[in-house]
Length: 631
Image (cartoon, rainbow, N blue to C red; front, side, top):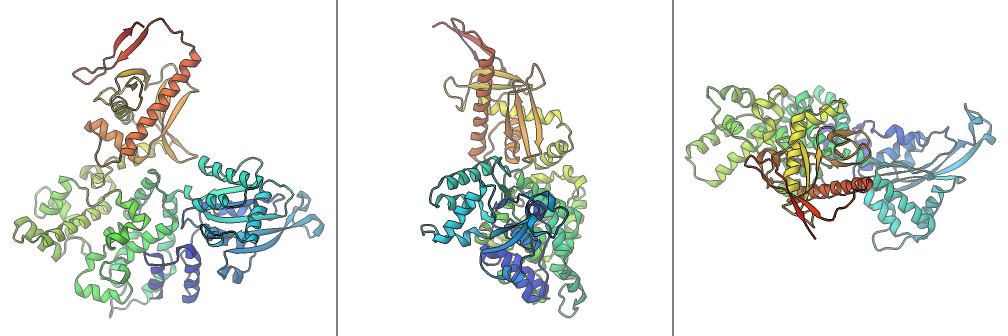
């Protein structure tokens, strides 16, 4: 049972986040249990920077958010360089070791001639936040001097010192702002800012490899983490000590049921889809948050200490008949936690934005409330609700449903209890409905992103396979852009209309037509969707000429926004004003690009001013009217 107690360290329990990797390692050694480990997607690239055969080793910075695996990767490098395990186990955020590097290629293959090697001192600052002084405090002279040496080493090819520094992205730049200003410090800080903004790993002439771990694909991290989680030997050991007497990990144990559900391809694929969509909304999920999600999904229950089950809780939960409260489907969204605790955890904050459970459709709610015994809906109710002995319709659900339908209990508390059960059951449906029935049940209407499934399959799926997005989807997006750009219910989707109000391109209603851009390729003009492999983004590109184009990062939320406007004709109230402003900023960029083309074409100005005023026909089609103004 030690495994379950150890597993709780990964869940939403209080801990020292700054030393999380060390905390887990110490607990693992104390309990004699291997921690959950897997190879980080960037591990090989980071370790290779310290290749013993390198004639010109360079420094490395690991940055990103808390929990991205920076300390873990530092430990991987330390082990690769034969660093002492006892030294690493100390709490010091700063360590050093020395390593022999070849002076030139004559030392290859390995030679024992000491004249062919030079000794390089490698400085490990594995936690800059724990090493640098607190905000407002002065630097200790030796610490500041060490960072001054680091800055100098970045631009000096003859240095015998290199560094591995792990720092959260905000802490990195802030620490350098507080150093005494020298030319090397200013140059180094500018390099950091450029690499962060441009999302690059290196800069010519600078002896540095820069890894921003926040750019790691969250879905890929999930793929690796879930396999390491499920395949941990602790689960097999748990199965061997199953006791029918106390029912821990027995056939009625919710922990076992959640573990088995997490093994299914459908549950894994839906979780992966949510994390992939987070990526395409610009929300990065760290390794720590992925492991927290998996742990909470399996161990969560609202009525136990820290809301995470331990072996002693299982018999009590079974006896009390509250197994359904341990639902993996609900735990995935932090449903076992208090609202305050849930809101303070990054992964649950991100998943809450999908509003799964609170969003619904008439069809889904008819299945849940009226499906029992119904000729058309009964099949769905039986398959997804009635036959789920753990998290489907139990006695509590049936009783609350009956009272809700018949109105026999006017208590708001009882009605609220049933509504909470409905939230949990909707979440269950999100993980139960198979891929082939997504369209039939409108699965993604259980989220605020009703076009998310299409975004994953028909946009991302097509582009990643070097395919082309279906024409109706592109035309719908163009129609949505036209409605935002003009502020009118325009129905045109064959051309992109750029319009202003005269002197203000971001006015809500713009009737003065600046230019029309053909969607289909025509004289260098076109509008396309593409996948940028370097950034992993979906990009909408508007071409004025083959060389002159403007890109727009088509995140999930922007895709949903444009699709809703195109089909519903109104700005979705559930989306922030930021989306709308982003699109108006995109219009300004397009108009600027158009002006560049005009400048190159050297159009000769006439003696009169002509304006195209946009009006719409009864069918909503644009009908520009040319107006000539004589000065």
